[in-house]
Length: 180
View (cartoon, rainbow, N blue to C red):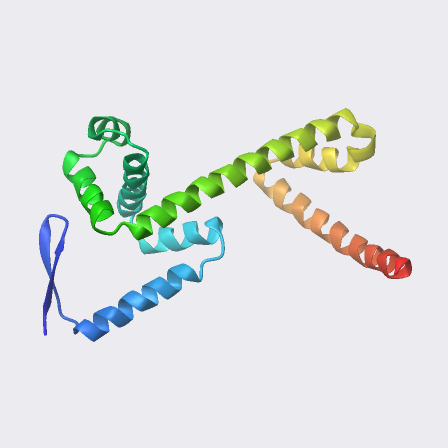
């Protein structure tokens, strides 16, 4: 049984059975759901998609977000440099179901909010550290060394820092056990 699927600008005839197609799609869904963070997702998408495909998918998500936030087609066209046909397809998917888009758009809002809070906290803590530099001087010196080093030296410094952390951990655990 051959299934015809309409894909962008051409018809695609699958040589797989309906069951084989469903199994492949479930494997893809399982692969995506196994991703733990943004870094892993970026690596997976880099291997899976061409840069153009990744951009196209990212634009569809942004189109859905902008449509859900009430932006006009013209604004979306100008901002994302996409055609009205692409926007209308996303709009139709949103009207028909759009549950996946809505879920992702909501989670993106939450992630952005978390990121802003974390960045604000980190920048405030960095200011505190700089103002109390006597207490944090070893860490500040290491950060400045890493920041101002070339790639080879950065790797060596990070390795040395990880060894230092490993040496400190047993002492910390001993102190914690004594306190218990």
